[in-house]
Image (cartoon, rainbow, N blue to C red; front, side, top):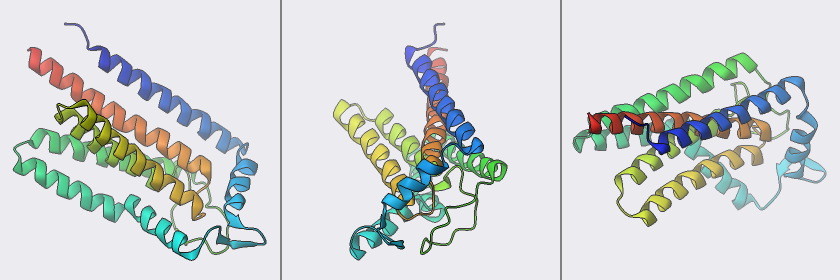
Length: 220
């Protein structure tokens, strides 16, 4: 029974993303990115006042709201609501698949944070955070949650425009959360890039595996 082309492409894309994560991780470990990381962070602070992000106060407050979309509390609520809906809709397998993908991505992010143990950026005025910096947990887990749910919605939609809409919204939310972490000074850019790569790779692996299983079951 031939393997669908989509599975090959999904696996290839996930491998490329994991390769990108590996390249970033290696450069971060060697300290090769620190100058560029700091330069980007300082470019987002008011000249002469590194405690103040650029832009008006209302913009900084809006970014704080956006970054909350990637918090474990908000993502947890989203996952619980979607899971409850899937159970009520009689899609138990899809619901448990989503839970597995999210929990797996969260555990992966946490373990890697402990292994790399990179200190947070030393910026005056940045929100106080107690976990390690690399990879960004907000970027990783938001990518897993939003991209997985976006892929599920796209898969269930018969219209191509809706498929593109769901995937586009998922990507936009993921990018917004990651950029907000850099703007607020709680993560280096490479933390976020690594988190995006890791989260997208994990979401892609999970959705590709689910598609492969469904295809095999449908042809059995």
